[in-house]
Image (cartoon, rainbow, N blue to C red; front, side):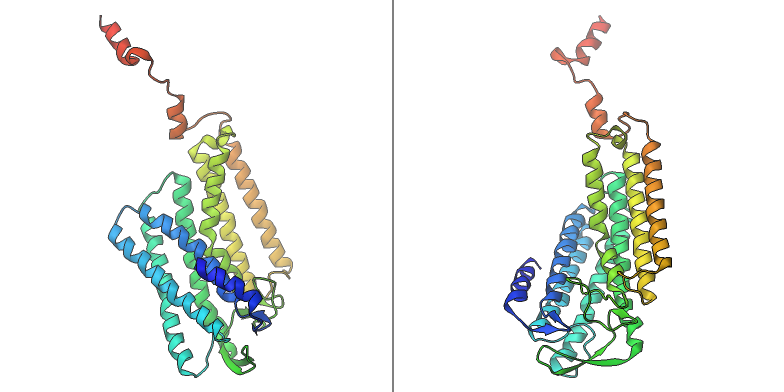
Amino acid sequence: MSALVVVASVGLFADGRELLQQSIWAKPLKFGASFVMYGATLAWLIPKLRRARRTMWTVGTVFAVAGLIDVGFIAVQAARGTFSHFNAGTDTFNRIGQQIFSTGVFGLFGASLIVAIMLLFQRIGDAALTWALRAGIGLAVLGMALASFITGWTSSAGTRTVEDAYGSPVPLVGGHGVGAPDGGGMPITNWSTTGGDLRVPHFIGLHSIQVFVLTVLVLTALATRIGRLRHERVRAQLTGVVILGYSALFTVTAWQALRGQSLVHPDAATWTAFAATAVMTALLAALAVTAAPAGSLGTDPHHSAASTPAPGPCGGRRFQRRGLGR
């Protein structure tokens, strides 16, 4: 995937072909970058799952192979100057490729779902990290499920014909947009500016685990300077607040997209939902911080060990016990 990012980045400048007013290499670049982040996260996480190690190795392999199939087809179709998603073309390569493409999607979803289930029965690190991983993988699975829902939701509009990179007609069944066809969207993401776009909550859900783990790392770093954050319970509570707020963001953007509303043109109801999410998240975070005793080292095992006096010379406590014995 890292190699694909390099190739697609070069293609953006070296290849002038376009699909729906966007470089043919934009989609491979986005998928490659996304899989770099998500794949690296799984590569770090899976070895830490102590139970069913052989099964987890198999799950990781299935994810890797499915990812190569899925993103590989996207890259090949881009090189051919045509569409990978929603392409109903009748040429032999596309018909066979679409069948293989769909198996890759199920492999990615199934592997992530198994990891999410296994995380429910194991603890990795402290409470904050454990819940960050559980919620992150769980929300990623929901984001993947939403991606599968995209085709079913938008295919009811019927078939539309667009041009490939060479001006030839290509039939598309379904799309990412709700209430507006794909194309001519925001820079880089290409999310629709005229209607709803289910890629928005899909992206938010898929990369939630990186946000949650980063939250834990930041809180752990701040704990060396802020006494209240030295409590494992406080860090876990603050991580939970971020999880709730982020999950609300996922829900609101999905609701917004399903109503055919662009992310950049929210109505009063959407603004109200965003504002309520921000206020509740801030209040819960403030409550979690103020409820902790200031300056206490709490139950953090690292701080507990640091607060225990080190053994003195001549054996320390052992010397004292002998003295008392005499």
